[in-house]
Each structure stands twice: as structure tokens, then as C-alpha cells.
Image 1 (cartoon, rainbow, N blue to C red):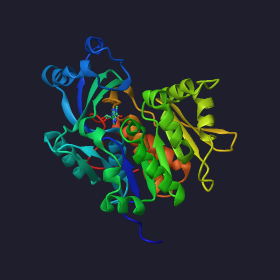
Image 2 (image 1 turned 45 degrees about the horizontal axis):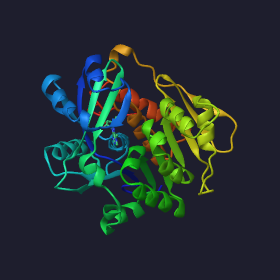
Image 3 (image 1 turned 90 degrees about the vertical axis):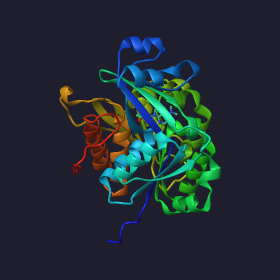
Image 4 (image 1 turned 135 degrees about the vertical axis):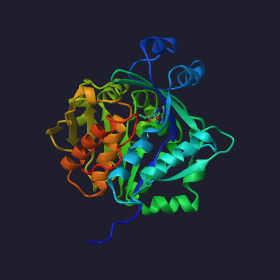
Length: 344
Ligand code: 26A
């Protein structure tokens, strides 16, 4: 077999530092937050970060949804398999991020903006729910200026799989489209995560513009329902939405689209373009007492799945690798993976 190519997986999104704490309904109420959600911070949310740090014993943990997935894929793959792009500042928070990705062996190429603060995400844990409130900071300044730098673009040309966290639709749709077109032109694999209900809801136009380029589309049941709602689909049932997603018009006819909808502890649904049957894959069972928190569970799923794709595993095995990595991650604090490493 030919030697594996280095940095065959390239991921793009928003590097964030998570400020994570256990809290209660009162804190959610104070900031008008849902127990299980992911939103962009408004002015009224800004004091939350200090409050989490000062009053709730918050921990600082590397986050950013697709960066978590990239760390997860690299956790499974041989060294130098994954490179991640996004915007960061030059401060204490970016130093923590760099340490964490170094431990995971993930290569990052940040667009460093010394005038902006590294992005942060308040992660409020209540039971098995997590509420995420993001202040993007420097992550919001990512764009084509960085992606098209010769040394970065050569990483793009070298990679075979692109993974885009849908949260990046709030930052740089042009960067996403550039990767989408590159993938279709060169028959590379383009994988997109819907990331959160507000993405298909409020960023519908840019999401739809990218849709013809999706080779794999990954979402959970609430994101699928939000997609159904904003697209006036007759049904919001995950089984119906997954089929619609798989069968949207597609640019690159050489690959059939695969749509994946996770449903928490319920089986993961998979639809393949042009096929009638929907496949179901059970999650890896875990005793509730072993769950630390669910922050990053979906990211870990994507990370394990991507590792499977890169290793050329079957669809069923790749999904199972995602379920496996999600089970490991929810036993850790935040979107993290156990060390010493476990082997799939
Ligand atoms: C633009 N937004 C809202 C975001 C995020 C985000 N990552 C990128 N962009 N909001 C939350 N996250 C990350 O999601 C992970 C859990 O799935 C958090 O940083 C957290 O690590």
C-alpha cells in the first residue's frame, strides 16, 4: 500500500476557548438562555464570562466545534494527519489553545490578529444539557486573505478531505465556498456539519449555496428540525429530513451524497442519495453515572467519523468510530479525549 499522505484532512472553523462550569437554572434564566443550545453572544451576555470564572469555578478548556472534531480525528489517526484553520488572537487564551492542540498532535494554522481577543465560549452545564454562548472575537476575522496565502493554499491543495464546521457560516461563507468548489473540481470529499439550529435557521442562504457541494452532511435531530422549518419541509421528523438532505441537487456526480442525523442516545440515521432505505446505527451504550458532560459529544462523533473516512473504512465502521469517540468524550471534562490514548 502507498504511504499515507500527511495532512489529508483539512478542517476550518472558529477556534474558541471554552469557559465551562456546572451551574443552575437561575444562571440560565439570568442570561435568558436555553438549557441545550448554542448561540452567538449579545451585549447582555458579556458579563457571563467573568461570572462563570469568578462564581462558578469555571475551567478553561480548548473548544471550537470543528477544532474539537479535528483533535478527535487526529486522536485516532497517525501523526500529522490533520490540519485546522481559523482565526485567533495573540493572548493567554490562544496560548492555552496552542498547548491543547499540541498535546493532541493537531497542526493549527491560525490567522493571528493581535488586535483582537481570542474567541471564547461560555459553556453552562446543567445535568446532561449544555448551553453555549460564543463571543467570536478574532475568530470572526477569518477570511480569504488567510486561506489564499500561498503557504495555506498549498495545504488546501494537498488535502483530500475538507471538514467545515457550520458555525463558520457566521464568519466567512466565501472561505467555505472556496473549499467547496476546490473539492468538487478535484473530486475531493467535502464534509459539512450543520452545527446548531440557528445556522440552517438564520444563515439559510449561505447554507443553501453550499448544499450542492456536500458529499457528507452531518447534523443532529434539532438541527434537522430547524432545517425542515426554514425550508418549509412537510415533515420535521429526522427520518424524513435525512432523506431530503441526501437528495438535494449535487454538483459532483462522482460521489453519492450521504446524510447523517444523530439523535442523542437514539440510533443515528443515515440516508444515501438515490437510495430508499434509511440505515440506523445504535449508539454505544453508557451508564448515565459515567457521563461527565455532553459538551462536544457531537464534535467527537464527527471526529471519529472523519478518521474512519480517512482510513478508508466502510460507512458503517466510520459511523461506529464516531459513536465510539463520542462515548469516550462525554466521560471527560468538556470536549476532550482520554489520555493515555484508547484504541478503537
Ligand atoms: C459561532 N459559534 C456560535 C461557534 C460555537 C462553537 N464553535 C464555533 N463557533 N459555539 C459553540 N462552539 C463550540 O462548540 C463546542 C461544543 O460542541 C464550543 O467551543 C464547544 O467546544
